[in-house]
Structure formats: C-alpha cells, structure tokens
Length: 355
Image 1 (tube, rainbow, N blue to C red):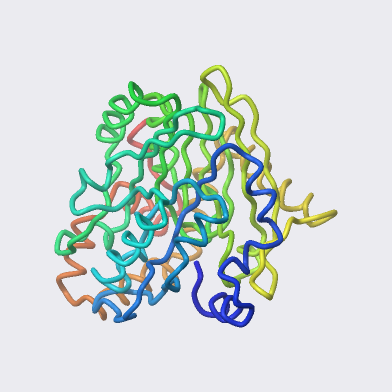
Image 2: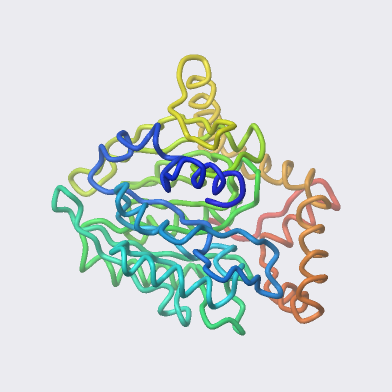
C-alpha cells in the first residue's frame, strides 16, 4: 500500500521503490514473485461515494513493481474500488502496459476468476486464481467485481486449470483484520483448494502474519501480513515473506524470512533477536493450527474486537452507503459471521460444518 507517508517518502527520494530497497535483491532470488497489490492507481483521485477508505498508489507504480521483479499481483481486494471505475481501470491499464499480469478482478465473477498462467524462470508453468470474500468487491452495482470463493466454484476452477499448468496457486483476500489466527472458513477454503489440486494457498487482508499449514502435498499461508506500507501498529511492522520450493509435484521446502517495517516506511530484513521473535511467533501460531486450538483462539481475538472492529465498520458502511449497503451486507452474512455473533453472545462457538 503506497499512500500517505509512503507516498511522501517516495516523492522526496524520487524513488518509486523506496520501501523495497533494503530487500529488493533477496526478493529476486526465486523463480517467481507474487504480491497482493492493495490499492488502486488513481489519477483523478475522486473517491467513490460508498468507499470506506481512500487509499491509492501513484501513477507509475505498476512499472516499478514490474521492474522490481514481480511476476503477478492480486487486485481482488477491499480497496480496489476506493476511487471507483476510474481507479480500477487506471490500475488495470497500467498493469497491462507494464506487462505485469493480475488476478482477482473483472467485469463479472467469471472474468474475475479467470486464471493467469505464467512461466517461471526455471520453465515451470504456474496458474494463479484470485478470489475475495468482501461485500464491497462483490457489489453487483459496480462495473468491476471480484469472485466469491464458494468451495464448489474454487474446486472446479482448480480442476479445470490443472490440465494447463504444472502448479496451481490460489490467492484469496479474506479473514479478520489484525487477528493472528486464521478464520475457520479460511482454513476450510485452503483445505478444499489443496484437496482439489492446488499446491499453494495464499491469504491476505488481516494485515498481520498468520500461521502456515502443510496440507497433503501443498501448503497454506493464511496471511502474508503487511509488507511495504505505512506503519499501523507494532504487530503490522513485524512481517515476513516466504520462500516456497516445489519439486516432484509437491511443496518440498518453505522458509520464513522475517522482516520489519521502519518509521521511514522501508522494509528491512529482521536480524538477531527480532528475527527470532518474528519467526517463533509465526511458528507458534502454526503449531496451534496443527493442534486444533487456532479456531477458538481466532474467535477469542475476534470477540474482543467485535464492537470496535466489526460493528464499527457496519455503522460506517451505513453512513457512507445508506440502507441499501446495509441490506446487502445482511444478505451477505456468512456462516462465519453467525459463529462470531454466537461466540460474542455466549462465549463459545458452534461447529456444524466439517472441513
């Protein structure tokens, strides 16, 4: 996310890649590089009337990311429509001009879920699919939308793509902000994706790192956290990127590379005690995913922030979007939301569906 203080540093240094400079070389040590591009590129910067945020990236960002080495980015996120059609089309136009493929957004859900196939430096063909669970990206009144990850839909998309590529990667903008534990529905989606033939599931939106889970031959990275962005909290400063090695049709190795976002909005490699703290934090969360404690821990964190985060957002949406937005929000309530409301009221959550 390249707004505010980040944009100021970029302008002052005359360097579009200011935030990446300390880690630019290590990011390019792999065969293929993926990231979640969280903001639209807007020229006019005219905010959409019902947009909750006002986050944008300056023109030229697509070419900068391509020059840095990114091979594919996700656009199916909850800020893509902050500046309306102009912001979406400016972003897609710049990415196309820069030759940087994107996933996750389209004129309808089928187009949004259209895969992108990319040959890595080593000659392996990767297929990327992108989805989102957020109502503002799914608003049918918008000219461009994301695709909601219904399990059957995702499974069918993966099976159709598997015949064309060597490796399938599923990217999904989902989860609860600032919650270190993945939502049960996110885990269910990751399991369904990998059971259907994907090797990698990549989650983003929580803004903090979440755990990893080995599933069959594949791996789920439930939240990539923030990476290059203005600092929000100490938890969002402590981040990582992950190296994944694939061979013989399966994930053979994975390496967490702890990083830290400085006050100057630069991402650096974490060292010494800080590196160990970040790595051990992610490993601890991962252990709770494996031992089955993460679901309840997720709801405990979500309950503590229910009124300050979830209810506050709904009130804000009512103020900006009016009754129609709230009606759409209610119609889009999912099983997860019912679990969360029940847990908030009664201190426990119910399980009906099995992974």
